[in-house]
Image (cartoon, rainbow, N blue to C red; front, top):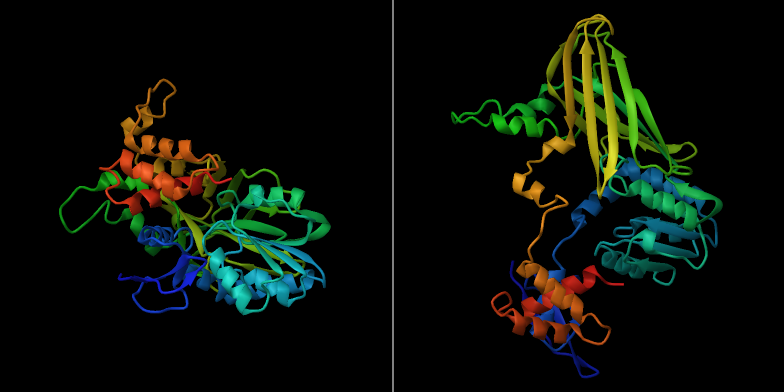
Length: 432
């Protein structure tokens, strides 16, 4: 990547610095006010991608079944004069549509830097006066008046994703007017056993066999405790799908889900894992599904592998205890499987206990550092952050903090612009 930095305009005795990351003039060149190259470098550092990449937002917009359903639900819900809250607005497509459908005021919430693209698009479409942008989390926002419509898509592959449920429950209680529209209104989750050796291959190869004569088997117990996004075929399902949870966003409070699933096998085959997907209801009669066999969506499905493939015969009973618990910022999944021959009273053919907790290598030293009796030592990184935090007094500029940081840690920050970038990062992390 090349870049050039030039300044040739002045405004109120300050320079306008144009930063073209590819070395050429561009409509997405960064322009900032400031007299120093260090500030330009800080802007470049800030421009590093976080969260979704812009191209990923484009994939969401071009996902026609998803977008058509959301647009239909929004068109039905928005009335002239409506206040709309767009949570996780990304590049602002739902906010723009809300204005197109007659909303008087839209609040677009997006913690990611993609919100800057949303601002530009609002200006380009003539809606800048109707959309208010909030680069924050919805849980930190208050509105002058409750919204008439809340629209969001905070899912990952599945709706059980990070703080999705907590954010919607909070917004519904604090930010939505009574008897107003919540889009989506509910998601229904489904599961089925699947026979697909191709989906299972990454869990067996190269761990159990490879072309180099190496023993990599220690990796296999880890990978079989991880799930991944796939696009499966409907004809690979071994059993009828079971509905196992309904997430009703109009009433939901609890983010954790536990369910017991059971199938009596009618068609013999080789089970490789559990496939999970959802049906979305955005409004009455409007929705979409990422089920296998439906038009392929950006979500795909979630494939939870079995510890090992298991041959199923007609009459076998497969029981799976499926559990999803929100821990910190992500879900901890557990799927315990029991297969018995000829019904529940028959011979146990397989018993697996799997969890994403077992899917990541953890060093004993790291575990020790989380014990209550562990006495941590200060590190230079902590001292650097502590210095910056001590200067956040509402009076000291970032430039002054960077100068002090550069002087105090010259080996760590040989260039002042590096100190400015670090100071800005810390200050932004703890911004009010």
